[in-house]
Image 1: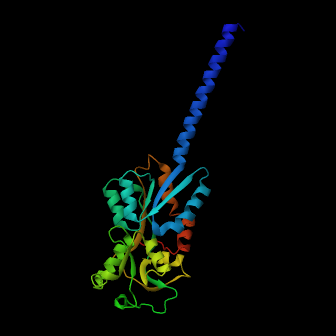
Image 2: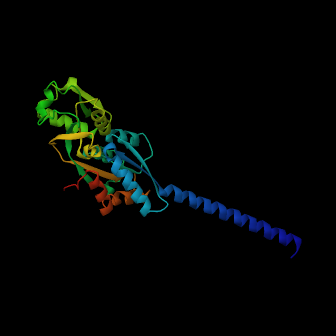
Image 3: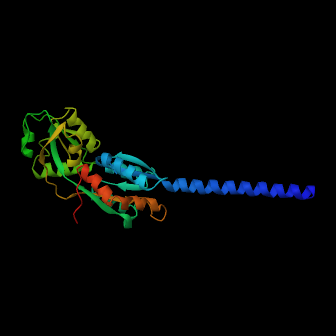
Length: 264
C-alpha cells in the first residue's frame, strides 16, 4: 500500500473509532439519564418507600431511585420551583389536585396506591390514655404534637377533627406544630409532647415507644395518590414506577408498614 494511502486509511480509522466512542458515550449518557429516577414522597411513606425503591431497583437492573421525603405541600413547592422530581407521591388528594391544576403532573398517570388512618398517640410509658378528643383539654396533656395544617396533610386532617369537636380554638396554647408527620411522631417518642396526631402507619413504626389512644374520624378518606411529574413521554420510567406501586409486591410492603389498600 502506498505511504499516502496507508496514512489516509489510518486517519479514517482513527476518525471512525473516535466517532464510535462519542456515539457510545452519548448513548450511555442518555441511558444514565433515563435510569436515574427521583421520587418525591410524603414523609409518612419513608419506611415503605425505602423498601419499595430497593425492590424496584432489583427488578430493573441499572435503574437508581433517589428518594426525597418531606411534607406533601413542601414537596409540591419544591417541584414548582424547579427541583428535580420524576414522581410525586402525596399524603392527600388535595395536594395532588393542586399539582394537576398547575400542570405539574401527567394526570393520566395518577393512581391512588395506599390509604391510611389518622390516630391520636401517647408515649408508651403514659399511664393516662385519652379515650376521646375532649380529654385533651385535661391538664395532663400540656403539649399536643400536630403537623402544621398549612403544609402537612395529617395536620389538616387533625385540625378538621378538632374543629368538628369544637376544640380547635380552645387547644391552641397546647398545640406544638411539626414540619411533617414524622416530626410530630418524634415529639411524642421523645416525650416532648404528651399526645400527638399521626397516621396509623407512623404509630406502627414506633410500636414499642408509642401507643394508639384512639382512631380519629376524618371528613375525607386518607388516600395517597402518585403521579409522574411532567410527561410520561419524557420519562417513561416515572410512569413505570407509579404502576409498580400497584404491584402485589409493593402492596405487601405497604401493608407491612401499616397502610391499607385505597377504596374507590
